[in-house]
Structures are given as C-alpha cells and as structure tokens.
Length: 121
Image (cartoon, rainbow, N blue to C red; front, side, top):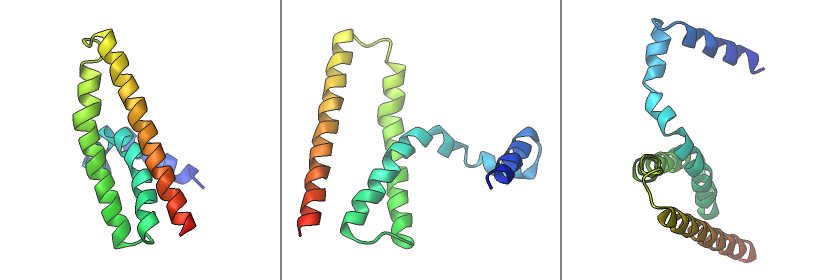
C-alpha cells in the first residue's frame, strides 16, 4: 500500500521543473525543523489529551503549538548547539549534558505524577 505514494514522491523529486515540485518546496522549512518537530509533537498530543479529548480544531491547535515549540527549539537550541559544538570547553559540554539529563528526569517525574493523578481521580 505504500509503494504508490513512494513511487509518486520519487517521480516528483526526479523532475525539478514539475509544478508539484515547486509546491513541495514550500514545505522545505518543515523539513529543516523536522527533528525538533518530531520531538515535540507526541508529548504535546499526549499532554493535551490528559485534559480533554483531542481531535479536530483542538488537534490543529495542539499541532500548531508543537510546530511553534519545534521551531523555537530548532532556532534557540539545535542551531546554536551545533554551531558551537566544537568551540565549547569540554567541561561546559559535560555540565550542559548533565543539565539536560537532569531536566529530562525532572520532566519525566512531572509527567509520571500527572499520569498517576489522572488515573487515581
């Protein structure tokens, strides 16, 4: 079932002057932030679904929020960290890594608590 869309995508990519190719190039900025967007979309959906069912316009708002968060994450974290990766002092890299691990642990604890509270009540 995925063969037809994959072949169609391949044909569009292979024809640089095609009208459809120009339409797809509009989506190129989404491709640039795709990793950051990938990291934000699912937590946004899950967190929003704790408060109310998410579908239709609510889902569009949640995904728009994930798009904004992904864009900010790309601009404020991903690009600067990649640009200064080799220029940073090793001690600063280790401290930054520990800070990120700590923040991830804190986020996991908060989400675990929210999950526990939502199941109990």
